[in-house]
Amino acid sequence: MSFPTHRGRRLRRTEALRGLVRETRLSAAGLIYPMFVCPGQKVRQEVSSMPGIFQQSADHIVEECREVESLGIPGVILFGLPEKKDPRGMSSVAADGVVQRAIEAIRKAKLKLLVITDVCLCEYTDHGHCGVIEDGEVANDATLDILAKQAVSHARAGADIVAPSDMMDGRVGVIREALDGHKFENISILAYAAKYSSAFYGPFREAAQSIPQFGDRLGYQMDPANAREALREVEMDLDEGADMAMVKPALPYLDIIRRVRDEFDVPVAAYNVSGEYSMVKAAVQKGWLDEQRVVMEILTGIQRAGAEIILTYHAKDAARWLRA
Ligand code: PBG
Image (cartoon, rainbow, N blue to C red; front, side, top):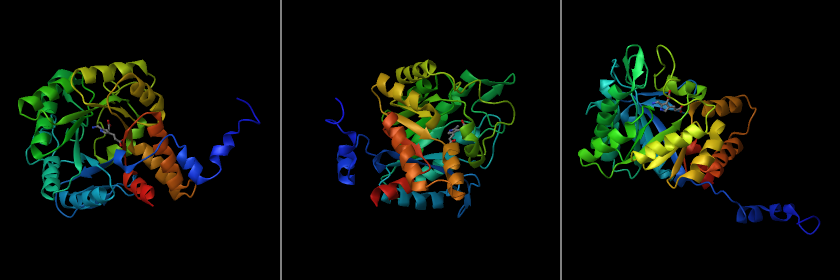
């Protein structure tokens, strides 16, 4: 195989040729749009570090969900900003909780959209950690029961998929068991299986008001330096009953996405997180990057690495560009 018989440029001559031989075809069908639900009515407050992303009351959430559906995006993932926080995050399990109410409103609007919920305590605890605190530490086993109750209450409200993001050991198993015990055996679990302790969550913590009031999340989220450990985490979550596995964040962990894709036969998701979005937005605002090209390159890269599902704040823009 050598020049001049072989010329790589032959297949790059025109868009028709490039399109014909393209290995990765991005589609809105694999995108999930994250949304932040707050209490009240007619509330729509932009997150300062995430231009274009809003904290919104259920009525506005429904409106935006309509737009999301019309763009061909199959689903949303909801994060809740509760009225009240407490040490155990109990507002997260309330039947009239902020996420539960939003799900009901989406269901009432008869949208076909998949509703995924983030199952975690950090948005609901006054200390901002993803579990309950015992002896100054995030207690694993004491957290599991609340997570299971939260997942069941999301399912009861009408969620299609629950996505535990807390990184407590054993949570997928107790959530599966609790769902099955309440006849929600058809509700699937998208496990944030390989979730790294990342500085790229910074803007999200402003959006979700979930900044830890002391310490950090290094004791439960993964060390960014580890790859083999990610495979063990995914394996455990799948053994416990997860239907899909997620890697998060996406861009600094493309190798992890690839390894998880190669190793396991379940759908693989990647979360293109808040900080990854904010970096792009900031550079675009300064006129330093071409937003459309950069976003499409990023999403293509994440899919090429092996993710068939991408959770991204760029979802609506990407869907529009894919359509044009
Ligand atoms: C925790 C959770 C986080 C994100 C999703 N779920 C933040 C964290 O672990 O601190 C981050 C999402 C993003 O940065 O876009 N429940």
